Structure formats: structure tokens, C-alpha cells
Image (cartoon, rainbow, N blue to C red):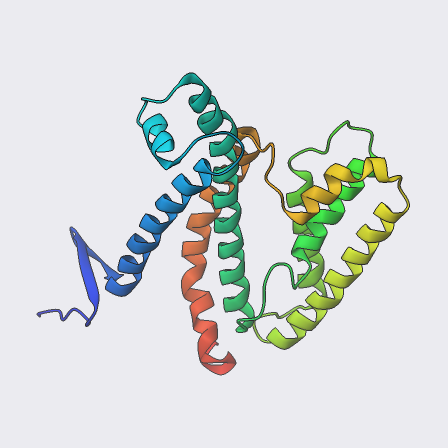
Length: 241
């Protein structure tokens, strides 16, 4: 029996298995990848120091000076990598949340996940004498905030509006607790914390980026497995059941 390939789809055959690739999505992915590569080169060339795009390309090709190699590979590349990884993680989180609650307005910062991460960092930095907060403090706070949200809203896939309302309330509550905690401390202790909550990437190294990349690599297959049941929610509660 002959099979018919849908319009606008590429078919990748692997033995007895076949994989359908949406042409428009992959062409858009290729275009955005090229744009991202150009923006990476531009971002590396910006900053203090006399280094243009040509110098960056020469350094990446192994023909740059020692000073340019330090600026590119030791200072600016980790910062750019952290920004890319953060954007990728936020994109994944936003896609999952919007699909779950069937609302394009739902974002991680709206439902309290970001505020839970910030509150955990504030608690570790201000009340635990560890010198500096561990890298896992932020993910731990985000997980606890997500667990609290799912506990308060037992069926987020069926009650998307309630999920968002409770998330906004939880976000405001956690944000208020964090602001109150910082307001009770001297200003000299709040500089790094405030910059971190604003989302800066100064001084970021690969030691910060690597754990996040590993976690994302673990979560990507899980996201693929959840794709079909989450996609069914778009057809309504009765059809999904």
C-alpha cells in the first residue's frame, strides 16, 4: 500500500521507521541559527577594548592576538553562552507552560517560578553564611515554587485560568517576601544580589553554564515524550480525555 506524504513535510526514513519533518519549521530553524551566529559574533565584538568583527572572526579562526584570545574565550564567550542557554531554557519553559494552560500569556515570571528562584538566592545569600550562594539554589527555589503552584491548582490542564490566577498571586507573594528580606539588610550586602535579580551576565564563567546545559540535555528527551499528551490539550478537555 502506497503512503502519501503530507504537503509541506519532509520524510526521513530510518529502516522501517519514518520521521516527518515540517519544512517550514526547519527552514525557520536554519534561518534563526544563521541570525544567532551573526549576533554571537556581534555580541563578542561589543564592549571595552578595541576589537571589531574582523578581529573576532580572526580570533575564532585561531589567528588572533593573545589579548584578543583572552577577551574572546575567557571573558566574552562564556557571557554569550550563558545568555543563549538562558534564552533557550526560558523558551522551553514558556512553551511548556503555554501549552499546558492553553494561554499564550502564561510565562515563567508570571506564575512565580522566577520569583521562587530569586527568593532562594536571597535566602542563601543573606541568611546562610556560605560566602556565595551555590548554583543549585536558584533551580531549587524554582522547583519549590512550581510544586506549590501545582499543589494549589490540582488540574492545571483543565483549569488553565485558575493556574494563571494562582500563579500571579504566588509570584506577588514570593516577590514581596524577597523584597522585604532585602529591605531589612544593609545596602552594602545587596549589590550582587540586586544585579543577579535584574538578570546580568557579567563575570559568568563556564562553571555556571555547564550544569544548566547538562540539565537541559536531560530535560529535552522528557520534553519530546510529553509533546503528544500536551498537544492533545489544545483540542479541549473532552477530546483530550
